[in-house]
Image 1 (cartoon, rainbow, N blue to C red):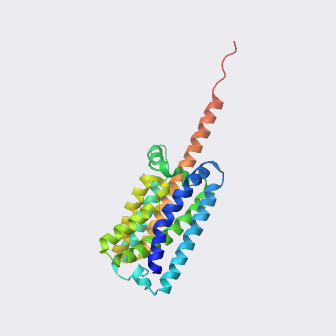
Image 2 (spheres, rainbow, N blue to C red):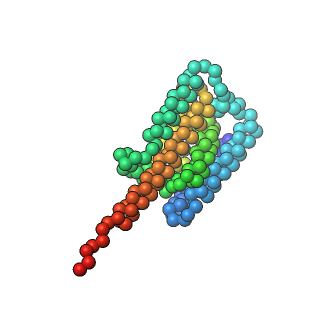
Length: 244
């Protein structure tokens, strides 16, 4: 009974709270200085609280943690996937640098979530904490617990689809484009979990993806500040008109 109730709460909590409150929260993020810092803090706290309560439930009903993917395999698959993630992280770090050549492409790609991305180094540091939090807690919630729960009643493929559909609905705040992206990324994290045999690799990949988005957001903001400063400097240097 508790497992069914917990699953129902997880399915409806994130979409419902976003429908009720996030329009106002989005406006606050766009207009109130420092709002993003509070958003990152409150999001991290909420995710850790939910994950802690879920962990207590898992412990109380005696679900083996290994069944949820909390294991450290010793075979080559785990270390192979881990190596690929680390190499991809290096390439992602390089590609997240915003230049005049890729500015327009990155700006358009992230336009739908710019309001939630950091605009200065302090916000980026907070975002990194939230990214690690999301990597750990959301993988536990969606790829571990919900996948395990659904797999008790349906086949593995359908369980993966259902868990990632719930993950997609949990990104209702970011609009249809990012919801679709979340679903696709969720499938990718599920594949990483399956290939490596461990949820730990999916947690790492999730955190890397979120940090990458934050670094792009910071780069866009800094590039725009630089363009604005250059524009102002050029205006100051324009020669005055000749006196009549």
